[in-house]
Each structure stands twice: as C-alpha cells, then as structure tokens.
Image (cartoon, rainbow, N blue to C red):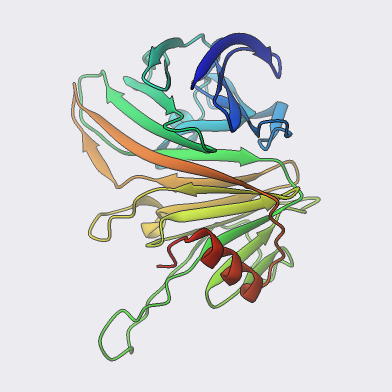
Length: 303
C-alpha cells in the first residue's frame, strides 16, 4: 500500500511517498525534485547539497540541492541552469504522485516527474516528461540525473558482444569531458565494467557511453542502487552518442541517463522512463569478478 504525507525534509516542503519497503520525498516548494530516497529504517542515499550552485548567465543561480532532477540535453548554461525555485503542482496518481513545474518563460519548456511505487518491494518508476508550451520546435532530449552521496563505487556495464560476425569492428566507445583525467585513480577501466570510486577530494570527472545493458549501479554503505532506462540502438543520442553518463566530484556522484535526441514541436511532449531498484546488504569493490557475481545474483542484463 502506498501512502502520501505532507512533511518537511532537507529544508523543503515535501510529499513523503512510501510503501512497505522504502520511502522517498518529493519536493513541493521547489522542483520538480525527488530530494530523498531510503529503505525503510535506512539512511538517505541521495546527496543533500543546500549550498551548491552554478550561475545561469543573465538569470541568476541554479541550486543543485541534491537528489534527483530532470534537465534538458544538450547542456547549455543559458537553458540548462535555469533556476527551479518556484513551487510545483503535485497531484495524486495511481501508486504515486506527479510533480509539475511552471512553464519556463525563457524556453517554453515545462518539466514533470511522475513517481510511482508499483508494488510492495523497493522499486520506483519515474517518468520524466518534457512539454513544449512554446511556439517553435526544440531539439532536445530528457536528461534524468540522480545525485548520490559520496563514498561508494559506481558500476558502468560495458558491451561485450561483437559488433559484427567476424569480431573485427569496434563494439564500444566513450565520451570524456575535458576535465576528466584519463589516468584518474578513481576510475578502474575493466573489460566488462568500468568502476568510478566516489572519493574525490578536488576536481571532477565525467564519462558517457552508449549503454545497451540499460542500467547503472552505485554501491554505498551496504546498499546497491540500480537505475534502468531503455536503450534504443537505432536512435541518435547527444554527448557523442551517450545514453548513460557518470559525473563525480567531492560532494556527490551522479548517475545519469538520456533519452534519444528529439525534435519537440509546439504542443508536443516526450517521456523518458527510469526504473529504480534498491538492494540491501550488498558490498562491492572495483573488482570485475565481484561485480559479475553480483550482477548474476541480481539477474541484471550485461549487454
């Protein structure tokens, strides 16, 4: 059974959404955001960042806040970093809530998160929808970003199947942002998995890639957070064909998924779905054999 309760969490007016297995907090006073996520009786897995901001040129400051948010790809400070400081409309839907922000006057885009707990287990479905309320077509993609607390290890599954019948063509690729050191001690480049240890003290790094497996994972404090998003092999993706991305700095690590590149016409909308699963009593090191055992136990696709 899903319950909804008005409350305060991390300094925000929220709706607490919970079932028998987990609890999450959806912001009402700003957003749309999922500002917290925890197994029942457990600690918040998300980063809480009350003072972390970035400048939106000519507009003001965007507050990261922490938690989970919806952005619009490709990244452009004048569009991406528009503040989301206004209250959102939160409505009840089957097994959850939907949070919708006011239309962005600068872009004509409106963002909405529909969050549901479809069963009694620790799983969450999040539908990220962008609406074009403006007067011109917009080239974009939904961009779903989860900020998790540091100290753990991210797991990025890699394609292993040959790209052709002879096995002579490349079967994987990476996008690296200019601030990402290739020899970073926080990245372990494996054959089946790439690991990112969220233990940076300064600087930042970011990796993106096409992800046929469709999932990303993060292990921290004995808990394993996995987010799934469908990959469309025939679609065009921004960021050098990246459908999955991982960004890390000292205060947090982000697991990110993108929907395909879309021309969104006035009056149209596009929705990108993620499904989250949270597993207790899981430990993980940046070790391929250990990760493969865990992936087999959880029946995750390997791509």
